Amino acid sequence: MSQYNQGTDCIHAGYRPQNGEPRNIPIIQSTTFRYETSQQMGALFDLEASGYFYTRLQNPTNDHVAAKIAALEGGTAAMLTSSGQAASFFAIFNICSAGDHVVASSAIYGGTYNLFAVTMKRMGISFTFVDPNCSEEELHAAFRPETRAMFGETIANPALRVLDIELYARVAHQHGVPLIIDNTFATPINCRPFEFGADIVIHSTTKYMDGHANCVGGAIVDSGKFDWTKYADKYPGLTTPDASYHGVTYTERFGIEGAYITKATVQLMRDFGCIPAPMNSYLLNVGLETLHLRVPKHCENALKVAEYVKKHPKISWVRYPGLADDPSFALAQKYLPKGSCGVVTFGVKGGRDAAEAFMGGLSLASIATHVADAKTCVLHPASTTHRQLSDVELIAAGVAPDLIRFSVGIEDAEDIIKDMEAALNNV
Ligand SMILES: *Cc1c(COP(=O)(O)O)cnc(C)c1O
Image (tube, rainbow, N blue to C red; front, side):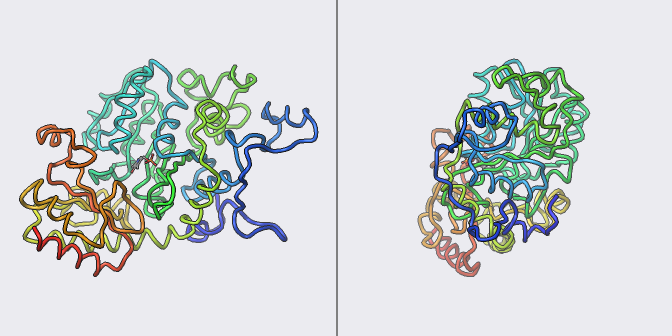
């Protein structure tokens, strides 16, 4: 546990230079590390000593930044991955094999949905998707004897629905499985899912954590609280010797606080190799140093934008968890009292054509397949990421043909709204 408050941890956690050392985290741009004897290196391979030997497994720059993210979330250990997609995959695959099953909220990022429902299904891992606001009975009914995890997003991208984390955690624990939360949109500044019972947190650091659209990346953080040994038969990968890693039993050697991340590092990263470049981790850290300043500004601007579009006669609907009449407002008050995120979704009257006319009229906001960085950007899923779907299919996927995903940046709110005003006059 950090001795400092979160704003201080944004600056200092994970790296404290000693006398005469660089104040910034050094970029260790080296594939390999030199040793004097083979015995020394052998001890590292056997996990008997800690140290670096090959950057695919571990690199000091990456580790400093991972330690900062662990501190911000209040976890015991963390690892960085080359993308958020890799983090989602590792988080599940670290504890699931062919034949296993996962219960997931249906309101999740489209890329995650595809990874789970299509690609991981081909690996023999099946998923049951539940409505994030379904009843407790419906949640229980989704579990099977072979269920090994539960998954959801604090604030869903792009549905902007807030998850009842405490309820999900309670149900997951009644079935003896961990709750994995994608905390990308909320960030630990607005919500720390471990405080509500979540066991593992993942991030697409590509979004607010980097915050400047510099580099794609991901992170996995362990709360260190889920007792794998209590359900040893469900998690043999953590509780019995790993033949692929010199017979080590992760829970015995690293305890319940360290087993999950150590296995993900020495086994999954070794085999799949989705390691971030040290340069990217350095850039991510520069972003993290201002996370506590940027996130409140994104939320402040987004609320102004949401209130502006709400009363505009050309807007048909708006969703933002910070609006008092939003369906997620009550959950947002509980889990995100400081603010939710910088993304607002809405529809322009006149449907698809009006949405395209609005976006074409923007000049400050750029059209980009991105969210959650400093510059305001906007996307019309129906004509880009989801363009292969018919209007009927779009509605079934929860993406209205007129849905505009507006990612509010940290420019001056007045200028963002003026730009929207001009574009709406165009419609
Ligand atoms: C973008 C995103 C991802 C995927 O992350 P990448 O870094 O693009 O691989 C996962 N979850 C959420 C909520 C996201 O917004």
